[in-house]
Structures are given as structure tokens and as C-alpha cells.
Image 1: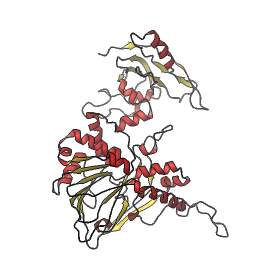
Image 2: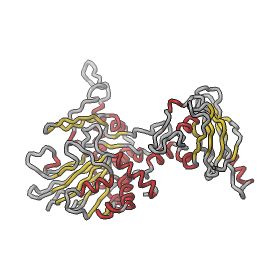
Image 3: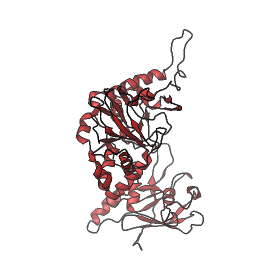
Image 4: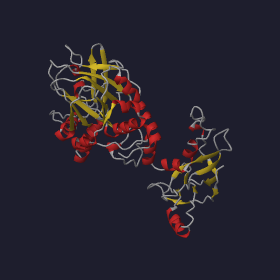
Length: 463
């Protein structure tokens, strides 16, 4: 059993956001500092206080559990703590699935008893608990409380990834990582290093790959599950007569991302060079996050158009018709609450969409806000003009010489890159040359799952 220490629940005053009724707050830093001087020899016992509401029935009831190491407040709502209980009665030990509904938690749930644990965690016995659970006691480790004490910690814990790092040519030339096929396939430690690098920079190279058409499948299986599309689970890129895709020609292929005309484009792309052209065909890469970072620095008034204006992407050929509208920059799908201040380029789910070769006629905001007077002069704001202005600047940042990483993909070399961040292009090559790449797509979720597991095993590197 845990050795526990009992503390008295004593509310103190806290004032909420401007204009709102006051609620009770737990202020402990001063007490901790004062106590640290008196008890330096034996350490400071945390002062745990329960915060009652004051004057508002709907005000959140919270518990403040000071961090013993830093003295920082760890302020968590009671309902959240009850909902997060992971004991065997609340989460099935075999399936890891939750055994009660969040909607079953009474809004008037309360704390009956509260104890501090030696590791800095807390043990809570509930009153007015979920039906059929009373009496129930929940235990929370110090690590859990720290992981969930603020929005930034929650993001780091739930994603368990290092920050993404925007790059230009100078930085990626220094940081670019190349792994051998053998070590990538056989070593989990190398896989851990490689996948973290892929997450941070969006780009990863593997060399010394056997001239085997199925090698790409073995590489993909180390990362996640192959994504099957109308191209197949794997596919070949080589020039053919009457090509149905510009990639299957020998001409220059501009910067783009793949399959943006689908509702859920693949997150990762793999290209394995089976045969390299004798002249030309160099691969070009540019970081969409870096281009967006530059746009932010410029603080252009038209920057919002990259977030708001919907571009129509279309593939209508060879018996297929795929089409989808999306903005150039998509914000994270989660963690959008007030006070979320992580820089835009490091947001865990921010995605870039740029694929001019696969654009169709625009469908959204091409005249709705344009108001004309009787003399047919414009009095409104053209969304399309704003977007074109912003897109011109974004393209300039994408294609600047100092933004582009150029490399020649020799036979036996493979590149893995983030298809929702990194733009790729290809120089023209001689039509008499043989250039053959094997390709595959993967979704982000299996990749993230593998990366979380590896970071749990080896730790999260500071890249």
C-alpha cells in the first residue's frame, strides 16, 4: 500500500477572467517558499487545498496540487480527474478500454477525502460519484499531474514528440540524416532516431537498398501500414508515352504535394530509386513550414488568405475523378483553446497544401464578397485577389534558392518525406535516359503510433 499523508482542505480566494464571478483559488508558492526555509533539512511537504466555487453554480471546482520539485501550481478540474481514473475498475486491464461514460459523471461530484503520496501524486476518494462506483478511490502519479497541468504539457505528453523544426538549405545541409537500409530494418534504436528526425525535419534518406522491388514494402512496414490508393499499394514512376500524370514524363515537375484532391491525403511518401537517369532528374525539396514561417515574419495583411481561401484540387483522368477543396495552410485539429501560444510552425497538426499541377477551377469565394456599384466599380474585397497576392509571396519563399534542397537520388537510395509539409519537385531529364522509382504512401496515424511507442521505449530526443 502507498504511504499517504493527510491534509486539511482549505479554500482560498481566486479571481477568474475579467468580468466573471470569483472562484476559489489555491495559492501556494508563497507558503512553499516560507516553509522551505523552515524545513530545508527535511524537504517541503506539499500543501494540497481544495478549491470550492464561490457565487457560481456552474463555476469549475478544481484541486491545486503543488509540484514538490518546482513549486508550480498544478490546477486540475475535479471532473477531469474523475474522468481520468485508470484503475482496474475504470479501465479494463486487458483491453485498456474505459468502463464508464464521461456523461455518467455527476456534475455535483465532490471530494470526500484527499491524500498526498510520497511521489508527489495524490489519492482521492470521491463523493457523489459515478453510479455503481461509490465509494471509489482514484490514484494519480506526480508524472500524470505534471503532464496535464497546462496545455503545452498536454500536447507534449499526448504526442510525445519533439518540436518540428523549419529548415532552409543551410540548415538541412547540416542536419540531413542518412541511414543504411540494414540498420534501419534491423535496429529499433536506429528506427527511433530516424523517425524522430523525420518528424522534426519532414525528410529522411536511406541508402544501400537492395535492387529488389519489394524492398520499399519492408521499409514501409518499419514505419507503418501501406496506404492503398487507385495507384495501388506500391507503384512505379517512370516516363511513358501518353502519360496520365506529369510525374510519368521526363519534363520538369514543379513543387507539389501528392493526392491533395482526396479528402484524406497520405501523410508520408516513400520513393526508392531503382534506376537513376544518366543526365538530369535531380530531386528538389522545400519545407512548407519554413515558407510559412517567412510569411509570418513578413506579417503580410494577406496572410489570412492562406488560411481561409479554399483551393480546388482535382484529378479527372483515366476513369478517375477525385476532387477536394482545402486552404493552403490548415491549423491543428486540436488544442485550439484560449491561451494556446505554441508557435504556428511547431503546432503538432498544422499542414501545408500546395499542388498547382493538380488544381481545378476554383469553387469557393470567387465573387461572393465582391460588390459592384451601378457604375460597375468594385467596392468590396476580392477574396481571390487577396489569395493570389498571398500565394505569390508564399511561392517566392518556397522556391527561393536558399530554401531548396537539391539532391541526386542514386540507385539504391530512398527518401521518406512528410507529404503534408514537404514539397517535392524534379528537374527534367533526358527522354533517352531510364529513370525508375518505386513509390508508396503511408498514413500519419500508424507513423505517429510507432513513434510514440519508440519514444516511450528510448525517450524523446532533443533534436
